[in-house]
Image (cartoon, rainbow, N blue to C red; front, side, top):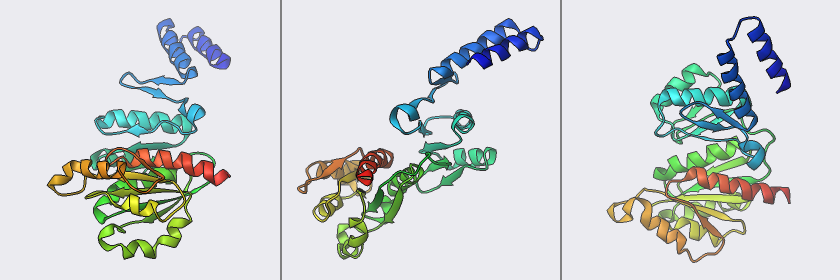
Length: 255
Protein backbone atom coordinates (compact mmCIF):
# COMPACT_ATOMS: atom_id res chain seq x y z
CA UNK A 1 0.00 0.00 0.00
CA UNK A 2 2.84 2.41 0.91
CA UNK A 3 4.55 1.86 -2.46
CA UNK A 4 1.32 2.51 -4.35
CA UNK A 5 0.76 5.71 -2.40
CA UNK A 6 4.26 6.96 -3.20
CA UNK A 7 3.70 6.16 -6.88
CA UNK A 8 0.49 8.21 -6.85
CA UNK A 9 2.28 11.19 -5.29
CA UNK A 10 5.02 10.97 -7.89
CA UNK A 11 2.49 10.94 -10.74
CA UNK A 12 0.77 14.03 -9.29
CA UNK A 13 4.14 15.79 -8.90
CA UNK A 14 4.99 14.99 -12.53
CA UNK A 15 1.64 16.25 -13.76
CA UNK A 16 0.44 12.85 -14.93
CA UNK A 17 -2.53 12.86 -12.54
CA UNK A 18 -4.70 15.61 -11.16
CA UNK A 19 -5.33 15.72 -7.43
CA UNK A 20 -8.91 14.56 -8.07
CA UNK A 21 -7.71 11.59 -10.13
CA UNK A 22 -5.19 10.68 -7.46
CA UNK A 23 -7.88 10.84 -4.77
CA UNK A 24 -10.12 8.53 -6.79
CA UNK A 25 -7.25 6.09 -7.34
CA UNK A 26 -6.40 6.16 -3.63
CA UNK A 27 -10.01 5.44 -2.68
CA UNK A 28 -10.04 2.49 -5.09
CA UNK A 29 -6.87 1.08 -3.52
CA UNK A 30 -8.32 1.48 -0.03
CA UNK A 31 -11.42 -0.47 -1.03
CA UNK A 32 -9.24 -3.18 -2.58
CA UNK A 33 -7.23 -3.39 0.63
CA UNK A 34 -10.53 -4.12 2.39
CA UNK A 35 -11.19 -6.93 -0.08
CA UNK A 36 -13.58 -5.00 -2.32
CA UNK A 37 -13.24 -3.88 -5.92
CA UNK A 38 -15.93 -1.31 -6.68
CA UNK A 39 -17.06 -1.63 -10.29
CA UNK A 40 -20.03 0.65 -9.87
CA UNK A 41 -22.56 -2.02 -10.76
CA UNK A 42 -20.94 -4.59 -8.43
CA UNK A 43 -18.83 -4.81 -5.28
CA UNK A 44 -16.47 -7.66 -6.17
CA UNK A 45 -15.39 -9.59 -3.09
CA UNK A 46 -11.72 -10.39 -3.67
CA UNK A 47 -11.14 -11.44 -0.06
CA UNK A 48 -13.53 -14.39 -0.14
CA UNK A 49 -10.84 -16.96 -0.90
CA UNK A 50 -8.97 -16.06 2.28
CA UNK A 51 -12.14 -16.23 4.39
CA UNK A 52 -13.80 -19.31 2.94
CA UNK A 53 -11.16 -21.09 0.87
CA UNK A 54 -13.03 -20.47 -2.39
CA UNK A 55 -12.80 -17.27 -4.41
CA UNK A 56 -15.97 -15.44 -5.45
CA UNK A 57 -17.98 -17.16 -8.19
CA UNK A 58 -19.82 -15.02 -10.73
CA UNK A 59 -23.54 -15.67 -11.27
CA UNK A 60 -23.97 -14.54 -14.88
CA UNK A 61 -27.74 -14.76 -15.23
CA UNK A 62 -29.29 -11.29 -15.22
CA UNK A 63 -25.98 -9.54 -15.90
CA UNK A 64 -25.22 -7.77 -19.17
CA UNK A 65 -22.37 -9.05 -21.31
CA UNK A 66 -20.41 -5.88 -20.55
CA UNK A 67 -20.83 -6.41 -16.81
CA UNK A 68 -19.73 -10.03 -17.09
CA UNK A 69 -16.67 -9.06 -19.13
CA UNK A 70 -15.66 -6.47 -16.53
CA UNK A 71 -16.02 -8.92 -13.65
CA UNK A 72 -14.04 -11.62 -15.43
CA UNK A 73 -11.32 -9.13 -16.32
CA UNK A 74 -10.83 -8.19 -12.65
CA UNK A 75 -10.84 -11.82 -11.50
CA UNK A 76 -8.24 -12.83 -14.07
CA UNK A 77 -6.02 -9.84 -13.32
CA UNK A 78 -6.14 -10.20 -9.54
CA UNK A 79 -6.39 -13.98 -9.08
CA UNK A 80 -5.46 -15.52 -12.43
CA UNK A 81 -8.60 -17.65 -12.41
CA UNK A 82 -12.35 -17.28 -12.72
CA UNK A 83 -15.53 -19.33 -12.47
CA UNK A 84 -18.91 -18.12 -13.73
CA UNK A 85 -22.20 -20.03 -13.62
CA UNK A 86 -25.45 -19.81 -15.61
CA UNK A 87 -23.71 -18.23 -18.59
CA UNK A 88 -25.68 -17.96 -21.83
CA UNK A 89 -24.12 -18.96 -25.13
CA UNK A 90 -24.17 -15.34 -26.31
CA UNK A 91 -22.34 -14.22 -23.16
CA UNK A 92 -19.86 -17.07 -23.48
CA UNK A 93 -19.08 -16.21 -27.09
CA UNK A 94 -18.17 -12.63 -26.13
CA UNK A 95 -16.10 -13.71 -23.12
CA UNK A 96 -14.13 -16.39 -24.99
CA UNK A 97 -13.40 -13.93 -27.78
CA UNK A 98 -11.97 -11.44 -25.27
CA UNK A 99 -10.19 -13.94 -23.00
CA UNK A 100 -8.69 -16.92 -24.90
CA UNK A 101 -7.82 -18.83 -21.70
CA UNK A 102 -11.49 -19.10 -20.69
CA UNK A 103 -13.38 -22.28 -21.62
CA UNK A 104 -17.14 -22.85 -21.78
CA UNK A 105 -19.15 -25.94 -20.90
CA UNK A 106 -22.28 -25.50 -23.00
CA UNK A 107 -24.37 -28.11 -21.20
CA UNK A 108 -23.43 -26.94 -17.71
CA UNK A 109 -23.40 -23.25 -18.73
CA UNK A 110 -20.09 -22.79 -16.90
CA UNK A 111 -17.24 -20.47 -17.85
CA UNK A 112 -13.89 -21.10 -16.21
CA UNK A 113 -10.20 -20.35 -16.45
CA UNK A 114 -7.55 -21.80 -14.18
CA UNK A 115 -8.51 -23.49 -10.93
CA UNK A 116 -8.31 -23.00 -7.22
CA UNK A 117 -4.69 -23.30 -6.08
CA UNK A 118 -3.78 -26.63 -4.50
CA UNK A 119 -5.81 -29.63 -5.60
CA UNK A 120 -8.54 -30.50 -3.13
CA UNK A 121 -8.40 -33.94 -1.54
CA UNK A 122 -11.37 -36.17 -1.95
CA UNK A 123 -13.05 -37.84 -4.90
CA UNK A 124 -16.62 -36.90 -5.82
CA UNK A 125 -18.99 -38.85 -8.06
CA UNK A 126 -21.76 -36.93 -9.81
CA UNK A 127 -24.79 -39.06 -10.69
CA UNK A 128 -27.83 -38.16 -12.74
CA UNK A 129 -31.03 -40.14 -13.01
CA UNK A 130 -31.52 -39.35 -16.69
CA UNK A 131 -29.91 -37.68 -19.67
CA UNK A 132 -32.29 -34.76 -19.17
CA UNK A 133 -30.67 -34.07 -15.78
CA UNK A 134 -27.18 -33.79 -17.22
CA UNK A 135 -27.15 -29.99 -17.40
CA UNK A 136 -27.40 -29.91 -13.59
CA UNK A 137 -24.86 -32.72 -13.29
CA UNK A 138 -22.41 -30.90 -15.56
CA UNK A 139 -22.77 -27.71 -13.55
CA UNK A 140 -21.84 -29.61 -10.40
CA UNK A 141 -19.01 -31.53 -12.09
CA UNK A 142 -17.41 -28.41 -13.59
CA UNK A 143 -17.49 -26.58 -10.26
CA UNK A 144 -15.95 -29.55 -8.46
CA UNK A 145 -13.25 -29.86 -11.10
CA UNK A 146 -12.45 -26.15 -10.75
CA UNK A 147 -12.13 -26.69 -7.01
CA UNK A 148 -9.51 -29.36 -7.61
CA UNK A 149 -11.42 -32.58 -7.03
CA UNK A 150 -11.21 -35.79 -8.97
CA UNK A 151 -14.70 -36.03 -10.47
CA UNK A 152 -16.41 -39.18 -11.76
CA UNK A 153 -19.43 -38.51 -13.98
CA UNK A 154 -21.99 -41.33 -13.81
CA UNK A 155 -24.97 -40.26 -15.87
CA UNK A 156 -28.32 -41.83 -16.79
CA UNK A 157 -28.54 -44.39 -13.98
CA UNK A 158 -32.06 -43.68 -12.73
CA UNK A 159 -34.57 -46.03 -11.17
CA UNK A 160 -36.42 -46.65 -14.45
CA UNK A 161 -33.54 -49.04 -15.23
CA UNK A 162 -32.07 -49.71 -11.82
CA UNK A 163 -29.61 -52.31 -13.16
CA UNK A 164 -27.61 -49.44 -14.72
CA UNK A 165 -26.87 -48.14 -11.23
CA UNK A 166 -25.58 -51.50 -10.03
CA UNK A 167 -23.09 -51.66 -12.91
CA UNK A 168 -21.48 -48.47 -11.56
CA UNK A 169 -21.71 -49.33 -7.85
CA UNK A 170 -18.01 -50.05 -7.38
CA UNK A 171 -17.08 -46.62 -8.79
CA UNK A 172 -19.75 -44.95 -6.66
CA UNK A 173 -18.45 -46.53 -3.46
CA UNK A 174 -14.95 -45.18 -4.10
CA UNK A 175 -16.14 -41.58 -3.70
CA UNK A 176 -15.81 -39.44 -0.58
CA UNK A 177 -19.08 -37.66 -1.42
CA UNK A 178 -21.86 -38.03 -3.98
CA UNK A 179 -23.92 -35.47 -5.86
CA UNK A 180 -27.11 -37.13 -7.12
CA UNK A 181 -29.44 -35.20 -9.45
CA UNK A 182 -32.91 -36.45 -10.33
CA UNK A 183 -36.21 -35.11 -11.58
CA UNK A 184 -39.55 -36.89 -12.05
CA UNK A 185 -40.25 -38.67 -8.72
CA UNK A 186 -36.76 -37.90 -7.37
CA UNK A 187 -36.11 -41.42 -6.05
CA UNK A 188 -32.47 -41.94 -7.03
CA UNK A 189 -30.75 -40.25 -4.03
CA UNK A 190 -32.69 -42.40 -1.57
CA UNK A 191 -31.80 -45.58 -3.46
CA UNK A 192 -28.12 -44.59 -3.63
CA UNK A 193 -27.96 -43.59 0.05
CA UNK A 194 -29.06 -47.09 1.00
CA UNK A 195 -26.07 -48.57 -0.83
CA UNK A 196 -23.14 -46.38 0.25
CA UNK A 197 -21.43 -45.12 3.40
CA UNK A 198 -20.54 -41.62 2.18
CA UNK A 199 -22.73 -38.49 2.34
CA UNK A 200 -25.22 -37.96 -0.50
CA UNK A 201 -26.06 -34.46 -1.69
CA UNK A 202 -29.38 -34.67 -3.52
CA UNK A 203 -30.34 -32.20 -6.25
CA UNK A 204 -33.95 -32.12 -7.42
CA UNK A 205 -34.22 -31.05 -11.05
CA UNK A 206 -37.07 -29.35 -12.87
CA UNK A 207 -37.36 -32.31 -15.26
CA UNK A 208 -40.75 -34.03 -15.35
CA UNK A 209 -44.33 -33.89 -16.50
CA UNK A 210 -46.99 -31.49 -15.24
CA UNK A 211 -47.52 -32.94 -11.79
CA UNK A 212 -43.81 -32.65 -11.04
CA UNK A 213 -44.47 -28.90 -10.60
CA UNK A 214 -41.10 -27.83 -11.98
CA UNK A 215 -39.10 -30.03 -9.61
CA UNK A 216 -41.18 -29.49 -6.48
CA UNK A 217 -42.31 -33.12 -6.34
CA UNK A 218 -38.68 -34.31 -6.57
CA UNK A 219 -37.68 -31.81 -3.88
CA UNK A 220 -40.36 -33.04 -1.48
CA UNK A 221 -39.51 -36.67 -2.20
CA UNK A 222 -35.85 -36.06 -1.40
CA UNK A 223 -36.68 -34.21 1.80
CA UNK A 224 -38.82 -37.17 2.83
CA UNK A 225 -36.30 -39.83 1.77
CA UNK A 226 -36.29 -42.98 3.86
CA UNK A 227 -32.54 -43.62 3.63
CA UNK A 228 -30.37 -41.63 6.09
CA UNK A 229 -27.32 -39.57 5.18
CA UNK A 230 -28.94 -37.31 2.55
CA UNK A 231 -28.68 -33.54 2.33
CA UNK A 232 -30.91 -31.71 -0.15
CA UNK A 233 -30.22 -28.46 -2.04
CA UNK A 234 -32.57 -26.32 -4.07
CA UNK A 235 -34.10 -27.25 -7.42
CA UNK A 236 -31.53 -27.34 -10.26
CA UNK A 237 -28.82 -26.08 -7.88
CA UNK A 238 -25.83 -28.03 -9.16
CA UNK A 239 -23.53 -25.25 -7.97
CA UNK A 240 -24.79 -25.39 -4.38
CA UNK A 241 -24.51 -29.18 -4.36
CA UNK A 242 -20.92 -28.97 -5.62
CA UNK A 243 -19.93 -26.46 -2.94
CA UNK A 244 -21.35 -28.67 -0.20
CA UNK A 245 -19.72 -31.78 -1.70
CA UNK A 246 -16.43 -29.87 -1.85
CA UNK A 247 -16.46 -29.21 1.89
CA UNK A 248 -17.51 -32.74 2.74
CA UNK A 249 -15.07 -34.47 0.39
CA UNK A 250 -12.16 -32.23 1.39
CA UNK A 251 -12.66 -33.06 5.05
CA UNK A 252 -13.04 -36.79 4.40
CA UNK A 253 -10.14 -36.85 1.94
CA UNK A 254 -7.80 -35.37 4.53
CA UNK A 255 -8.73 -37.95 7.19
